[in-house]
Image 1 (cartoon, one colour):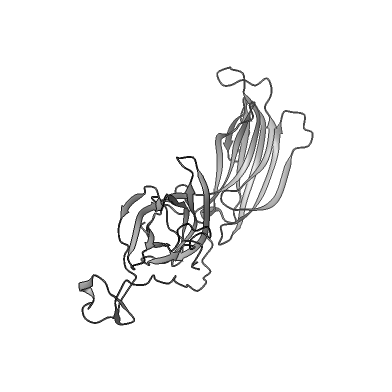
Image 2: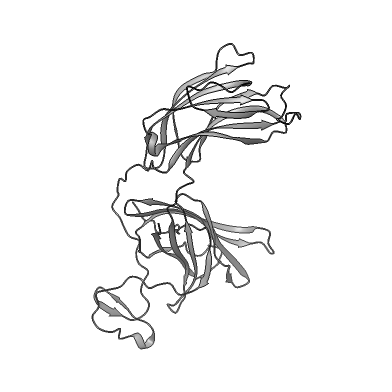
Length: 350
């Protein structure tokens, strides 16, 4: 995989975020014989078998040769579900869907029978079952996953037909095609108007205008794997010492999780460091996508008047400590001669 130095890099995910003021761990050292001769000055570090005065330099990002991990199909599913469009223009799920889990279904067709009944209500079953009683529309849908790539793009064959339609359609609507979608992406399948004479189950006027089917690709919500990480926002001071803030975070893979550090003062100005991160378990480590922002707030609590954005993807091994430098100060003089970085340590907890 790869490590990126410069833009930014952060780490892993957070369900709960703990904050503490602390000193980050020193860069990894080793190979020295005997006691630290600079210990009385509360300094000194070991490198390449010898002791040096001062604080250890930030470790360089680890350069890992490119790898070709197996496609991650175990944590992806395809869903076909019913949706309702209300008379006020709002759309909501009908609460009925059929899932195709790639873990067990690669290369195998999965079929479902959908019925639309009454006020846009849906029912689903599997062949050879017939459509529901009093259904005004019905579909037969078949999904066959055929391929998944390392970036989670799923290729599959979709076949469907609106086999029941009490409206005026003479030719059943249908499709037979190959699609490729990533988790978070969706495709509409078909829609039908709800009869104007339809009533709710308790006899009230129906507020649903249209019923539809839609296909989505999603990461499994039942994934219990857990990733933990320590992330420091580090400022290296002119005297060589460091000030830092720590966030200890945990989350499941693929979760989009925000992070926030306390504001940094600079004269009469202050700056917020915040962003979001997504982690994924890969062969030999953890890959992390990060978006971070350093922003100057408006007076009060009404947003920001200026901001700089950082994006990066890094690959980190369990137990590693990695420093990633943030871009130097702004050209307009903000944060002059102040050096910030992120220091990261991560591991899989379960």
